Image (cartoon, rainbow, N blue to C red; front, side):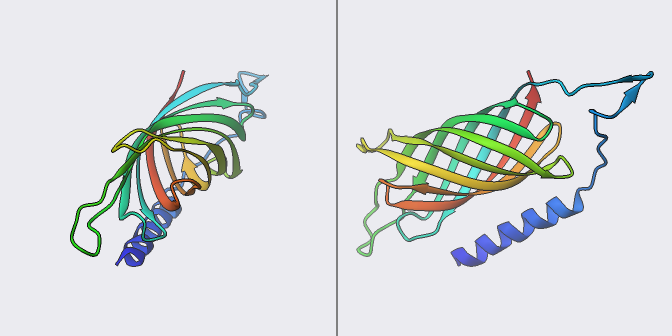
Length: 181
């Protein structure tokens, strides 16, 4: 059931990404009233909603929200800082007893590189996850490679996230709204 849902999510993301075509103009070579415009470096802020499916049986699903600060180094490369809250939901054990969910605060730094049409990107993030719920007091190393699509306001990505000390990992979908600061 989980693998069927994961396939559906991945196919829906691919269909959306391939159906949404826009045309961009390279601002480094665009001429406005006879002058060449340079790319302005700057900050962006994004607010995202995340949903995921763990790839093992430790948890059933996850839900979270995040805030991402992005600094554009160039038109195609950016540095990111991401934090928020993620909850890993656990169902019942084999005896029907409710298990403890795990909520944590991720703190990640990353690098984003646009690889196709200035809208499709790859992203790599590393950082820590700080457990904050249900008596958990562990901190874990986490790493998260991903792929995504972004335009001026919308950012959609799929990523794999590994939580070393939490003994689980997940494939997550992020839907976000972002804007220039």
